[in-house]
Each structure stands twice: as structure tokens, then as C-alpha cells.
Image (cartoon, rainbow, N blue to C red; front, side, top):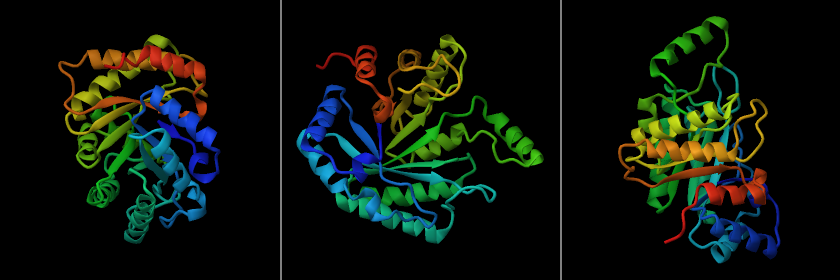
Amino acid sequence: MWARHQWVGETHTDAEYRAFGQLLRENRITDVYFHAGPFEADGTIPPDKYKNAPALLNALKAHAPGVRAQAYLGQIRKVEGKGVIEIGDARVQEEILRTDASLLDLGFAGIHYDFEPIYPDDTAFLRLLARTRDLTHARGRLVSAALEQPTLEDGLQPVFKALASRTGTVRYPPRPTEKYLRDVADLADQVAIMTYDTQMPTQALAGWHFAHHTERVLRLIGDRTTVFMGVPTYRPVTGWAENLEVALRGVRRGVDDLPRAPRRPFGVGIYADWTTSPAQWARYRANWLTPAT
């Protein structure tokens, strides 16, 4: 589950922590990506932004032992002069890694990156991911990454890029190719696919979207890394068919379409804690969780 910044940035009562811990246990959440950024352009994060992280981490040990709390970090990438951060800059990477180390020192179980956009020729992100893996694994922690859903057809990506170049825009789809998805999976302990925002006009199409990407992603990298398929609990700005139940049914159908189960763990990623009502949590349990054994 992706969680709001207030958990690390603001103080909370023990009753709030206790209720949050109960929610995590009841819904069998294994990992929470607590927003602790975003990065500044130089790769730093002012410590005041995550001043409540020690209290949060201590509370989780008491009220939700076993749940991994990861620091959710990201920023808008610079692409052809647009954006905030240039992660290919050696000095910026060093600052990012120093920031990561500071957050691990506080007790976070891992580092979760959500840099956007990430294009399939982005070697800078792969270098950063490899260095972060070295940092986290040396401490017995995790590194995870959020990516957009893969391309529908890898061969079309160069065409989109060429068209964008001719029209003077950088907004061609930032979708990972099969190779790039595998490259990321080989460097990350977990990959979360941001499958939401489908903009589909019917529930049948939205369900197909989640089923197709679930089957494809798990077939491509389900033996290499833990995979979470992102599902929405918010009302989309565009499109009217996407919702939590449609997404969960689609993910289940995608899993059923696999010739065999992946060798690594897999599940769904709730986006997000601040948009999920008690009624939606009930629907999540009814549509996704199986009885505990």
C-alpha cells in the first residue's frame, strides 16, 4: 500500500497508530510505502519533512510487527530540459544515496523509488537502482520500484518517440519494454506496477486491462522478483469504469491465465491509504483475500 506523507511528517496519537496497525493486520498488508520525499533537485530531502518517521516506525513495531515500512521517494525526472531532478548526474546520485542511507538509519525496511517518467532507454535509473540495491542489501533491507504498465507492443515505442521528437514534445508513453522490465526486476526486490488510471470507458475493457497486464508482467518477471499490481481506490478523473472491484477481478483473471504460479511472491498494491474508505477495505477483503490458513 502507498501511504500519505503525513505519517512521516506529522505527529499522531497512540490511538491513531493502534488503529492503523489494526487496519494493516486485518487486511494482511505486507509492505507500506510511506511517502517521505520528494527529493530536491540536488538529491537531498530536508530532514524536517520526515521528522515523525522514528515515532511511526516505533509504533509499527508495536502495533503491526512484521509489516515492512519502506521510504517512498521520487521526483519528476528531467527529460530534454523539463522536470526537476537529473538522476544521471553523478553528484545527484551520491546525494540520493546519502539520503537513502539516512532513512535506513532511522529504521526503514527499504527504499521505494517512484521517479517519473522512466523511459525504456533510461540507463541512469538502472545505475541508481543497482547502487541502491548494494546499499540496502548490505544492511539486510529492500529496494523496490514503481513502474508504469509495460508497452502493449514494444515495437511501437520507437515510433512514438520519433513522432514526439518531430512534434517537439517529450510526452510519448513512458512504458517499460519487456527487456527493460526484466532489467529492473533483476535489480529490485519488489516491482510495483502502476496499473491504474486506465481511462477505459467500460468495465469490460478496464477488467481486460488489469487482466492483460497482470498475466504479462507475472509471466515476464514473476520468477525474478516480488510483484505488486497497483489497484485504485480513488475515483478517476477521466473514465468511469475503473474501480477497485473491477481491478481486483481483472488481476485475479490475469493470475488464472498463467500456465503456472510465479516462483516469487505476488499480490496487489493499494493506491492509496488516503483514498480507501472502510467500505472499500471490506470490498478488498471480499474480492481479494482468501481465508487465512
